[in-house]
Image (cartoon, rainbow, N blue to C red):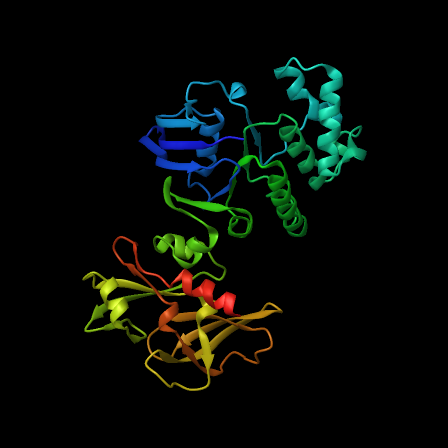
Length: 378
């Protein structure tokens, strides 16, 4: 186990058009035994960052430290860091047993019987002892994934690095493996950095999540903090499915004015705006309430455009009666609603988010504390 610290790490590449910044001045600390999930869209720099930590990619600037020791110039095989890739990279001519023991045989002086015992114990942990004599071509995708994990675990590393290890699995197996990976990491208590573009994996697996975009770190916090208290509009829009609704508005005299709505706000929200006038109003679909009639200043007349039944819930696409903007709401699966229905969309003031339109910075978020209290009170 170890503490991993990234201090202003940067990675640049040169091409015919000049310099490309793939990772831009990222700093964060991963605690001993923590499961940190790094998430972001394709091309945001998350895999490059992971490869820098592993020693597979040189660092242009900044430092990577393991338990306080800078490891920038330490060879990858000497960092005591194990990496699991998206492609399992198993040796096809070797058995599972040979694949799992190969790294120990090449990098340590352990006797064969001790290596064999470590492989057997790891196979038991992963539930694959019956596969040890098979070749990778005889295994399913999930089994190959377990073997790749076993090859990393058997090394007893200080840090696990995982680069989208579940992306090649089907949806059902991916959900199963998410649970198994969480259990495994808790049992081993090894510091883990897990890279994914899948927000579901980020929200369900990580002690904390780090969100990247265009090579820059946007926010590092617990999943619930990032969801309910996003640092900026990118984080708010990236997390959540369906995504948060956004409306460009201008603030004047206590009212947010947009193409399709006029939304008065109370004194606490007014104070948080810090004089900004060009804003973005955000509301998550699950926070939009559907009512029969307009009864207050936060109710808006809409028409149902499309309904997407999901079984447990309905994703409802609404069109404002004025303007051309749309609003997505999430309704209970038993709600009877159809395209063409006239409904009132209620946007509760205690659930809205407000962002600076120019910088994207969050000026006001709903309170995570009040959400937690509401959940505790049932």
